[in-house]
Length: 299
Image 1 (cartoon, rainbow, N blue to C red):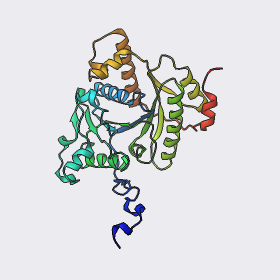
Image 2: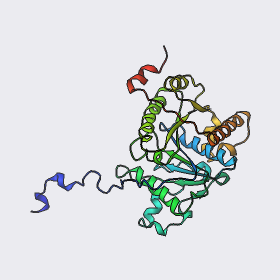
Image 3: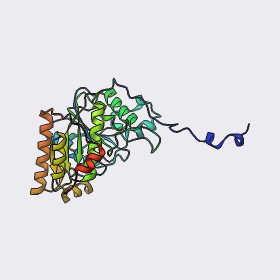
Image 4: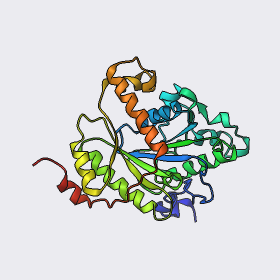
């Protein structure tokens, strides 16, 4: 039989062939630090929130590690002033022989000593983000970089709650959701709550609250939170200085002082301090999609 005799469908690679999707090792855990996972709708400002929260923790004297979990690898650039190479990139460069890697190959110092890692992700449509997160944590443990860390922050891609990008919940103590005062981000938050609730059945992660970002008002968010028993931890308005900080590749703590900026900086410091000393969690039941649709809005 020649290749011309083989049905065309058999010439195609099987769906998932070449994937790096694997079962995560349950023994690879972060045991010595407070671990937070930041979720939310795409474009809501998770990286801005994560980076400035990392900076705030560092200003409290904590040893901080931020792990970006997005193939765009842009979580930490305001801390490091660069687009750092990803863990998946450096692993590929040594043909996945982890023993050839050094910490400085994938961990980069940032503002005020924050350690920064960009986990990255597999090529689009060919793999699982969970593999990358798992390998990142495994490398950090192998190089003993978690032994002297007080706080770990996972900044997670968009509102994807599949098994792969929900994998930081395996390592996190608390998951926080960033949302604005609008329908789309609250709708996404509700679905993320469902993912956190599902993961909490097998892991220690708990919902730690929500952060309102890029919003003048908080009426819709607060009304939704009250209905399901969730609380808003902090509120960051939609200020131009925040937009400019991203363009300047800087944290908010490096921008030119102003009264409105000082208020935002103080809110980040208050949030970091409360997360460090507190351990609150919320066992809430998300709404059905249709119920969220009917609940939000104006009469």
